[in-house]
Length: 168
Figure 1 (cartoon, rainbow, N blue to C red):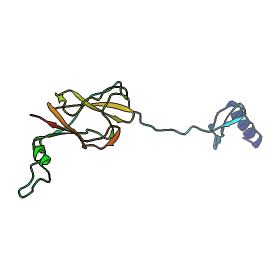
Figure 2 (figure 1 turned 90 degrees about the vertical axis):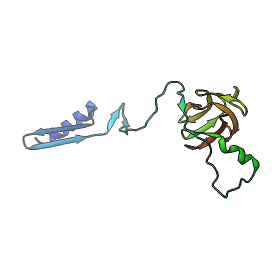
Figure 3 (figure 1 turned 180 degrees about the vertical axis):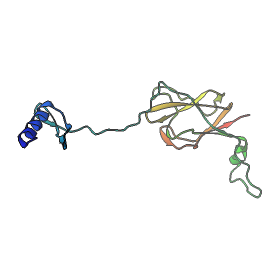
């Protein structure tokens, strides 16, 4: 294969639009790589983009982890206020995930629960937004909401206390 045939081969490959051709004739190996050209413009080779996109339909209820009554104070400890003495029997509802805590299903709706409301297992207590998905957080206990420990629209961490519930 002479130089003229190689040049013609290069021109042919360029006109065909192929970006890479490997050719082997007898003991000669030819590899032609050309940039992608379309309508007279250079086209950059696409770079692969790896992105994980969670797929979920609707709002999936998520069960919360219920921690039994707040630990009893150790011997010798005295409560700083009378209110702490009453919190020994309360149950803490904690966040099952990292995200943004919302007390309402949408800005124009009422809150899911308020202080003094009675809840039962399966009742939605709040919504936590994680990666643009709104997850309803359901109660696993029954009782009366005594305290809301997180401000509306604030970020929460995994296992962060959200509510105090009086089971009696």
